[in-house]
Image (tube, rainbow, N blue to C red; front, side):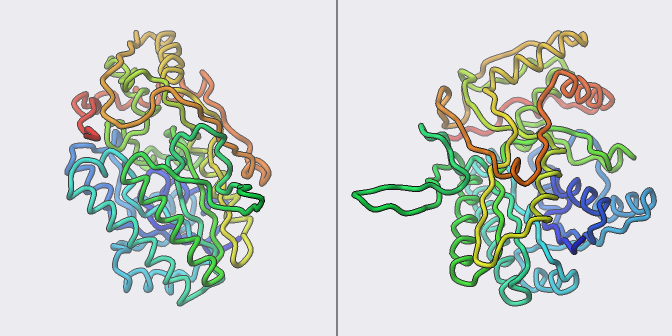
Length: 383
């Protein structure tokens, strides 16, 4: 068991990870500035469920489990705060979720783009230097994204690629071709981390995660006030979560363009497995380990058909609409990511079965009266 500091501990993934690791015996601290809550409110993109603030969540969790999670509130773009949190929590591992997480938000306008760039890169830079100055042996676990790679017409290797060129060979970071400013900041994160790994011998795991879906975890099932921040809007909601809410609320599923866009998806409970495995399996000093964090791939059309099939059987009469694509992306392409690293470490994947879709629909239906259809249609155009 180890001391783990989670940056962005109020988020969809951050809070679920904090409870999961604490329940398994790790000493967990979390820090958050509530940035996501603030910009969700500013863009009329609030979560489906009402989520207590971070300290109240920690109090509820402690009252049920008798397990404490230490909470810090503040902006990690402030280096003094980053250092105070680091020295107070003395972590063995740091899980870095503390970034503006929405591609559509990053493409809204100059102000949103600037906030995304400043917050994401400054937080990562401050984290790197806090580790260098206070504990270079600390293991940084950074949440990257499969969106860094884009959709190349070759297999996507796990972070690295061997290249033979004019009779010589070398190993490089796999080429990146991000499709939004948000994803571009993640590419820059990887480059920053790789530079400081080479220069200062840091220990870093970079998890290239696909879109995550799901609501309930083992810990949140104890009390709905412990549920993650579940978004269904066009700005913060991932595609499966959006489609599930649309199916419940009789809003046709919003397929952008032809619907052939293919991505690698992951259940929320598998994210927790992956983070636990990363914490338990530290990398060597001077190593950047990159793992593609996905379980299976689907086109958007395939996802819509799966959710329609289950929703119809449950009496929801789900419809599918193809809308003009507000994004700049290929709608029919090759996509084959390698994702064996986490399997080798012990990941037991959860696949998107009809039973899992039905369970999520049943949970969402409890909160049906809170669904606002105006939050569903695309409000951000890449052009």
